[in-house]
Image 1 (cartoon, one colour):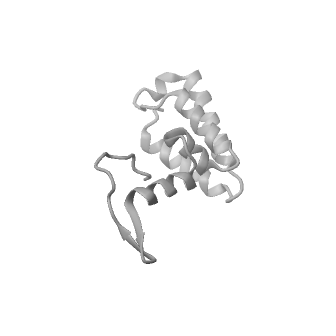
Image 2: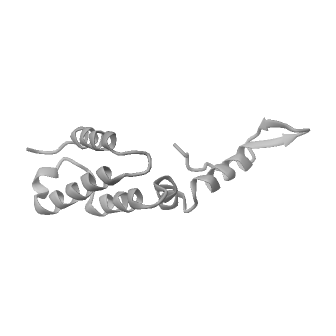
Image 3: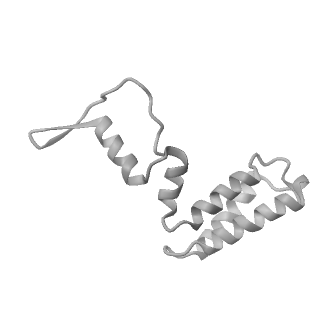
Length: 113
């Protein structure tokens, strides 16, 4: 059986349903098994554009005490709260206690979503 991106997403969602807000053990177990399968039988993953290193990065982030901060550190090199504060400074200004949207710079920044 050859894996597709859709199959992996579906299986990951099923593993996610088993997890609680404080535990990601099913996600981690699924990603670990997937990585092992990719190493043992790479021919079944030939249509999937993900590497074992990328899977390991996901395993590391989901294993962190705060996965969202771990993912943000990988992508933006700052925590979620730090990124939100940066965006707030870039896109809004406060005058007389009122919040107004303003674009301070013309350069593009990476999207949060």
